[in-house]
Amino acid sequence: MLNPFSYFFDKSIKRAVMASFVFVLLLPMGFFVSSLFENTWEKAQQNMLQKHELIASAMVEPISLFLTSRQHSLQNLGNELLNMEREEKLRPKERDNKPLNKKIQVVLDQYQKSFGDLIAVTYVSKLGEKTISRKEDYKISSHIPNYQGIPLTELPPIDDKFKGKGADLFSPIFQSTISKKPVILLKHYILNEEGVIKCALFTEISTKYITDMCSKISFGDKGHCAIVDQTGHVVAHPNKDWVKEIRDLSKLSVIQKMLDGKVGTTEFYSPFLKTDMVAGFSAIPSLGWGIMIPQPKIELTRSLGTIRKNTLIWLSLGILVALGVAYLLTQKITNPINTLMKRTHEASAGYDFIQLGTIPKNSPKEINQLWESISLLLTGLQNSNKEVKKLNVSLNRDINKATKNLRSMNKHLYDVSSKDYLTSLANRRFFSNYLNKVINQNKNIGLILIDIDKFKLINDLYGHETGDLALKHLSMILQKTTRKGDLVSRLGGDEFIVYIKDSTSKTLMAVAEKIRLITEANPIKVKGKTISLTLSIGTVSYKGSNEPASLEELLRLADSAMYTSKQNGRNKVSSCKFYPRTELTP
Image 1 (cartoon, rainbow, N blue to C red):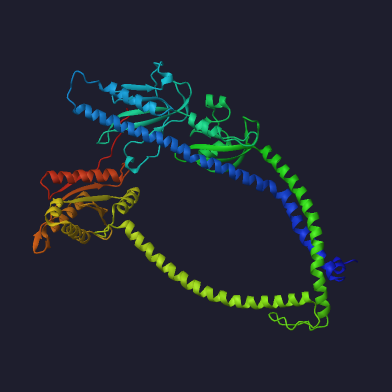
Image 2 (image 1 turned 120 degrees about the horizontal axis):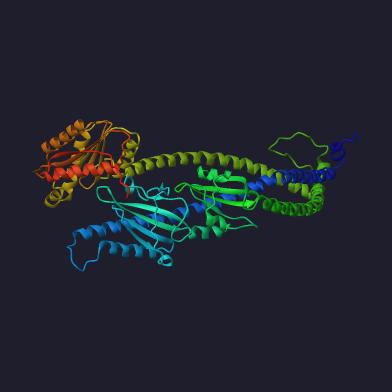
């Protein structure tokens, strides 16, 4: 029986090298061709779907920003109308004054014109009176929109300062009774200083910006972009009839995944193109919307077939060229090797791995050069290994030193970001983050807000260094009079705040009174002068329950109690109880 290995390797080194070149060339090519036909579709599909998913994810930010900008502008409009109402109350009544509703109409018209995508802006007073500004194209319409019955969803607050003060709301896509086109409704409550709803603003936003942005995305023959709202109804789609009638696509599997907040790739059947589709999709978390970038599956297989065909053509040409090059290289390599083999055939077969030994006499020049080069290479590798070991030792030492310095710097940065530079107490940011976590754990909370009486006078009479000394003095008293689980923080200036863990109103007042008495009994002494310190203190107690609460509300109540202490002659402790805020719907 013919042994192929004996046939090639027992005859001559030239045949063996040539066979090795061919084998090394054809083996990976065989794996490549096999992988090309077995796995290329999956990989190509995955790569293309990942691109679709990236496009869908990239559109999340501009759409979110579009609605956030309208939300922000609506809040600014609400603030402007609230200020106008306050000024109207303070202004003496005169015959030539414009009625308030006409002034509101002027402001609404200016606001509506500043945005080209606003169909209508409606102001609803607490008594239900409406003032409407329509887009110029719809001025002739006398229809008064009625937004009762339209389901609304809360929008995330633009800033933490709006938390707990009446959420902005937005609707699913619906047909405007004014423009007869698909719109989105934004609703904003206007609150007074006590957090009570005074009135409300409604604005209808055209979806043209979103549909125009979506229409610019196209690839292949029928690859496109589609967007649905939080109920699965069409916001943007190449089928204009679907957009006009606000088609419900919520039963499609890909739509259900987006409404569940998922991001990824999938396959589904398109009732629009009546074919199997592949798509990358992404949810818009802040809105509950979904964006998908679908493409007919047949387009991917068609492009893959072209890729396979072109690959096989170039692969065949590459094999022919490689075989020719392999033959030439075999000739170049085997000639000096044959000479070396002949010269060393009778030499000792064993030699040290590192030292090749003496070159056989009468060796050809090529073999001499090859032998010397290999010997030098091995010697150089030995020396390089020694240097690498030395460098590794030095590098490990430098890394350990740099790691130690980095840890020290990180600790310093943490202290700088979380502590007050003057008193080393917790700063406002650290206190806010800590208290928000405590509030979320539904625990009992007691806050003591402290303000040094006539602190500005101390700075003016004795200088800012004395003022700083007073702040440090008070911070030491606060730390000594509080427990380990409590938290003392400097809010800024001469204001301090203390969180008392698991406190009641009675214990909170006792701690506050103790702080006031100790501070009053321990004046500071500067350059032989005794400077007394007194405090105006406000407390607020919150019993963890299902009542709505926020840090901003608790701080406002504590500040109100402290202001009562100021009004009652300073050097007092006043308390304020927390009551849940109820909202009115205009």
